[in-house]
Amino acid sequence: MNGIVYKSTGSWYVVKGEDQQFYECRLKGRFRLKEIKNTNPIAVGDKVVFYEAETKGEGVITEIAPRENYIIRKSVNLSKQTHILAANIDVAFLVVTLNNPTTYTAFIDRFLVTAEAYSIPAVLLFNKVDTYTPDELAEVKYLAYMYRDVGYECMGISAQTGKNIDKVKARLQGKTAMVLGHSGAGKSTLINALSPSLQLKTQPLSELHGQGQHTTTFAQMYDLEFDARIIDTPGIKGLGVVDFDREELADYFPEFFALKHLCKFHNCLHLNEPQCAVKQALEEDRLHWSRYKSYLQLLEGEEDTYRESE
Image (cartoon, rainbow, N blue to C red):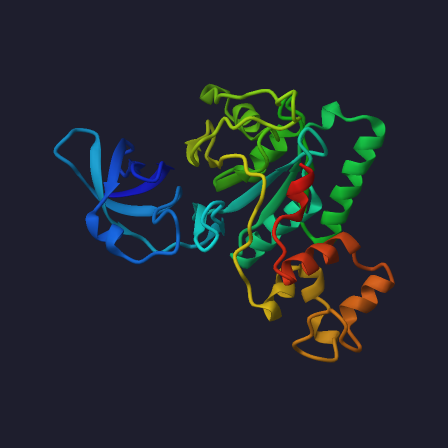
């Protein structure tokens, strides 16, 4: 039977079969024998083939279909391995908060680079706009302006009050989406606003550290009340980007890629090379310096430097 993985715990997988029933499945042994670099051989969103086990409601996965795309990051504890957050995604949402908790531009840019690398449309959702002071709201509007200027879709929303949730629904219609963000950014609250019948568990921010408390332990996909599916992921502090070739990294910054053909050297890294169109555009304030700073951090292989101040 064909099915789609809705939840992955690492040992068991909840699969929705073509009969619209859910099965708790395990992997057939041969998958475990394969030498894999990913911590999870199967991810939420994967299309699989499975057969029913003798115990009702259980199954065994025998085949994984090729993935159309996926969002991947370095595993937190096993830096040499990678972890696939979700697969076969039509759109990826990043929930951004100015504070409580703070979403730094370095984190946003790592997310966008990863989405670009795997050809996944990305949307930035600036959440909690109902809680900001006028000065904070101005800062949010500037961030949205900057990323729109680069070419990304941005929405100011309030998952708590419902502001612009209808726009998110319209963007989701007929699609499978993934939602990513820090703990406490409001991912579960957003999903509840999109589909109130789900009643996902939410938690307030930790008063001690101003950080969110993990309410989602494993990635899980939900069918929404309209024609859409959304994958909720555990809140993460850092987004370790999987290594790219130095020469190709700038291609995942659309504004840099657009100028690449104007550089003197076709393999220009936009560092100290002569007649670099990107550096010239920066000096003329036609590009955003925070994006270039993120590019340099990734180019030099720096890990999540913004995490220390969280």
